[in-house]
Length: 372
Image (cartoon, rainbow, N blue to C red; front, side, top):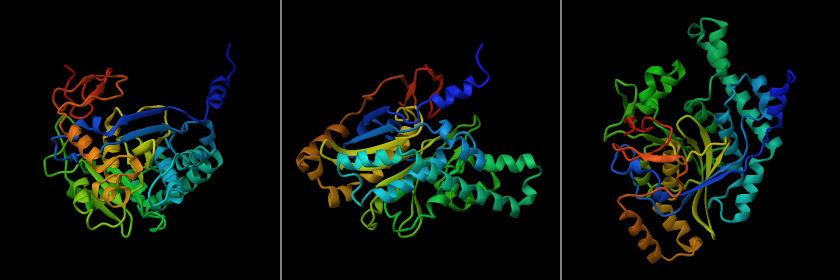
């Protein structure tokens, strides 16, 4: 017979650090963005997206601060803000420029004492904000249970935005929050979320079909890019690309909304790893093969926009000349059907939007078309 605390002992024995890595070529990702104006196909520069699973956000080491701050068990929103803060202090204006830079950042992200300290700061700040909201909107909370549920809710996009805005603007010069447009979810949003959605995200469009799935027209934008320097501003990916001749700051660090999960990404370009966008994730899952991978492609395109690459990167860091890059780009653009170079658990392509879905999915994760 197992002891009563067997489950708790097993949880504590789980490793804090994770070591899994996933990698995909940017040009093999984001098929659904092709030919869909709301997803805005930017004709990406060749490069890679690499996901590092660095530590487990469900590890028992976080239990004490979760209880103290009354959070949910899933704390990826809090962690993403903490990691972005660390990255903004650590990453220069050129992003990661060497293997040493990458390993140094990974070691900081895996320092338990540093992570606990920074995550706790975010948790306390959010809890205080929510307590103030309850005090000033008593009529919205009929019972103690309602108040407790509000305090314990997952972190929303608007709250992540609030926390990122607390960073020194100069420190956040290369920071962006890349997220899904939540305006279609207005009807289900909380009161404080509705205020933010109506004032800021309505213009990006989108609606909900009768079957509950989200729909975007050609004039809408499925994604929103939020930047913080020199002033805070929200863009569609198309607006961002068109403005690159007028925007002086480039993006090196991103918080990413992976459609149900949050993580942090950092731009890197150095010999051996040319044009690589690094995702730092805190679960065991691979998000490159899911709708979260679409967010990663947007972040890659933002970090490696042609204006920035031409002015600062050039081709020196990749060891390629402009002719080689032009040939590779033309080759990529000429491929009408692209295949993933990571195909684990991805065995059926949607007939409607061509998105590649997990073998166990009965409906497409993008357009909800039934598996043939």
